[in-house]
Length: 272
Image (cartoon, rainbow, N blue to C red; front, side):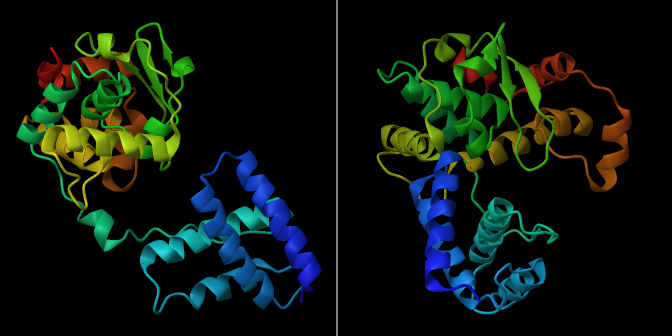
């Protein structure tokens, strides 16, 4: 078992490592809290992944799914820093809240777009544009820097195991992406969404977020009969299940996918 001095030293190094990775302060403190509880309960000076698995197993009852997932990633980060062996597979279960997050209707999205077009803070139309046209996830938007916008394209560093996609910047939104201070980070991008909601609806609707736009985009493109292969590629999903083999064999280039999608895109004309 680690003594108090060793525990505090590890936690200090853990905090510095997380800050070096540009994690949000809220995330750092939560990871640190979980690491402290684990280290004070660990039986070995160099805990095995078996001990971590037992620790996570105790959280199956009485804890929310999201809390257990955070604990998993906190311990994984700790083990990585300490170079302790780690062989625990990532939890795949999604929370009820994530699976049932509400979507925005096309009329609501149209109102959001109309309100931000001439707004003085150019970040609002820029982030709303890449969200409504490409269905970017929160962390994908948070990762955008000016370097990702080159030669009328936007490189999206896909999350959740998907394939990076170099999207063509549609003519309709190109003016809104110029001269924008990208690189806001997760908290900043979430703040942008709230500001847009206040602007369009005078309120922030509980349960809604950037993913509500992504879901709406997928729903409307499906209604327009977009080919499923094109949809998978455009939304940057990881090929799995029944789509794994066709997505692996089909060599669809990014520009041809974008061209096909733009012809049936439900929100593109709203930016014209």
